Image 1 (cartoon, rainbow, N blue to C red):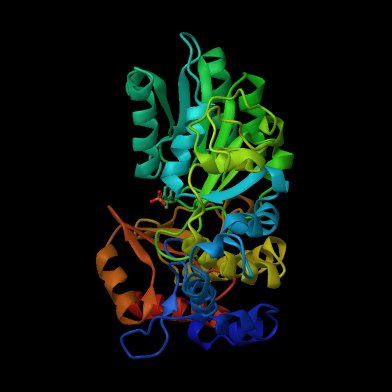
Image 2: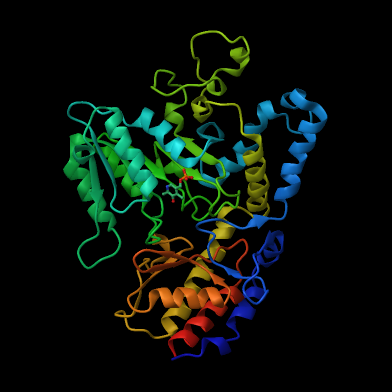
Length: 424
Ligand SMILES: *Cc1c(COP(=O)(O)O)cnc(C)c1O
């Protein structure tokens, strides 16, 4: 067994880390001993950026000083507030500005997108999703089936790993899509599975779906701010994501939406409409007859929720200053590989502990999911006492996600050290 605690590697890696200083820009909750915790839960709720308070305060001041005039005047008039997030959002997910908008929250947007991109007919009515998807996605899809008077059991087809495996093979996903063929209306899969941490091959899935005439969309809750995404080039039809996980925009934060450019000039595409998606040139004429704005903006319903958007804008600015996703991803791959190395170095048999996240860096983001067959809950509680915050997912998985903006290699080393002490 390697004594990872003696390894000098973490300090060296931190010294060479171009992102090391960004850690100072976040608040870390204190652990039981009062020291900042080792926070590996950014896949669930990202940490509070220190810049967030000032960003919100600016809008309090605008409201205080201008009242309703804040919609039209000041540093960031609220009428155009959402537009100030467009360019950074487009860069974040590999989209053109016309293809993205930030609004609502994630499950709401899933519904809005399914209204447009799940259009079942008598013969083409199935939805393909991953088995064990995040529950909100399961309920959203079930209720969309009901909305069309269909039985979810007929509509929903779930992808399951082969027996003895924990994750899906791309070839199996493609084969299932081909098998469903003309009956497949929509593919809706997570970009990264919340439980296993597996990142799917979104380009391959999109190609396969389009080859049988289906729409293809992704829930990017665990992928946005985690992976380098190229939604436009991958030809994805639609996607949405929350901003409070890897994007640090606060509990219940706002959500991003992507709709491919090919739908940008399709006012005929069925959607649920509201005034904020209406052509702004005539919005305030308050007339009948919805005329959508081109692009994703034409799916907006309500006037912008300025406070959640302000939090998100502050957080996106940090991502941009860090150099964007290519820079974050490079460090993320190293951090997660280092965590994997230290866990393996403890030398546990797979009957005791397995990493169910793929070891291929291309098939995962920041998160590793540890399936702990014995003493799982005890291990989780031990880590918590050591000031290491991960999360527990029933029945026996501990998820740990070192994130590149604020986690250090030293954080990861502390995890390896704690595991060694627990299992010795
Ligand atoms: C986190 C998460 C959600 C949460 O949805 P909200 O509408 O933001 O509560 C939904 N789907 C997936 C896949 C998630 O990971």
